[in-house]
Image (cartoon, rainbow, N blue to C red; front, side, top):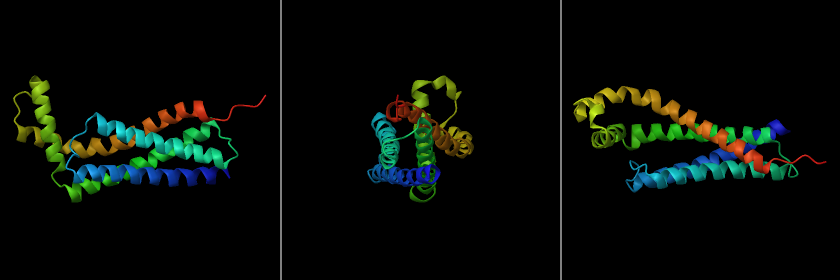
Length: 172
């Protein structure tokens, strides 16, 4: 029952959390604020992710007579993070290929001007078009695996910490 039960919670809470995150991202897109990755956006995304993992683990614990092992918390949290990562990659592909086909050019332009302002020596006299042309081939190779890797990693780390607080203590 543990295996089947945890898969249900992983899928349900992973999809629910992904829908909330995607809705938040679409809201930013329609407000034309999707290029601005400021602290508020990062903190909000992190809180939504952590809330989804926490609620999924607590719902699983409640369904199992208030009993949950630390390993189950890690498994559920990491599984929810995997679902979130997959949906995030699909949303990013949808955003960059359908909604805003010039997304990567704009992101690289913002990056160029930020680098020019902060570390002009790193550009070695490159102009904007050279910077975009040299950077563009690497965007796909690094962005999508990074989304998956870091989402799962942060979900796992959070799950380890969460397990310390919600796992069932051994009865004496």
